[in-house]
Length: 317
Image 1 (cartoon, rainbow, N blue to C red):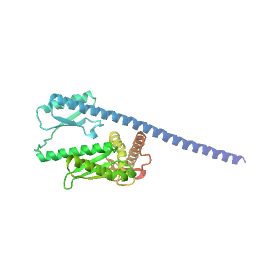
Image 2 (image 1 turned 120 degrees about the horizontal axis):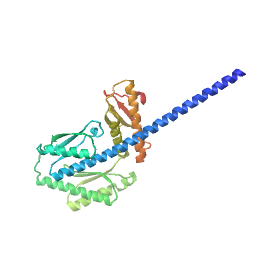
Image 3 (image 1 turned 60 degrees about the vertical axis):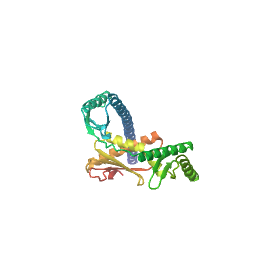
Image 4 (image 1 turned 120 degrees about the vertical axis):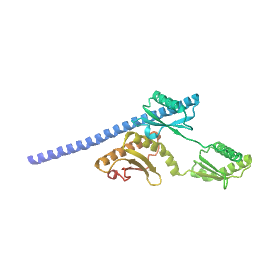
């Protein structure tokens, strides 16, 4: 009887230890997940501030060049935005002249005032061949502009948001328009919109253009909603993982495929690193979904590639 009591006490103790261990691990994972989430949010806020700083920098350089009578502009590669190394800036000019030195100094001074850190400026000459535009070409350009304005005005008056107006003058003059509309309303109103735009343009410009109106598919709408999320993934992985070398995505597969390219080699350590990158990307997606109130049920798949372009996260599917 005594022995049974001891066994019973042992079983209870084991259950207590097991329950404690499970709860501890669950709580520990929750703490890690919350810590990662806070870290990602902080990084994303810093990224937005940095982008605002870069925009301000570009505006100030443009304004200063205009005041000094300089013809040129500056670009900063995306990969250089968050690098700990000196930022590689390119000064684009039409002709290399004595003023290039002064322009480089303006860029460095404005970069310093915006606390962009150390920058290196390379001058790149972009010679643009100026061609004479014939009167006929000018007239065609003006006609296309007028047609676009007329089409946009009609769509706006009718309450349609267009996502593109394509005007083809040859061989068959055609206007192709893409709008956002429910399937029911689109089917009902498509012909009337096409007729109205055609007749208005013919009345005002005396040209006979075929008008084709289409609506964006659900797949296209979903793809557009993903763009802010995909942009954040690209920015944050480049910023926080020095082994990340590229980013790609594909809506041609189901589910959406998000590929992170790295310079990692095959091996256990690299698989662990791939898992960290994958967790980070999941975190970015969750945060952006909440921020945009979108895509709650949209499936996706994250794939990490090694430097040989092979799947690295086979153990973390």
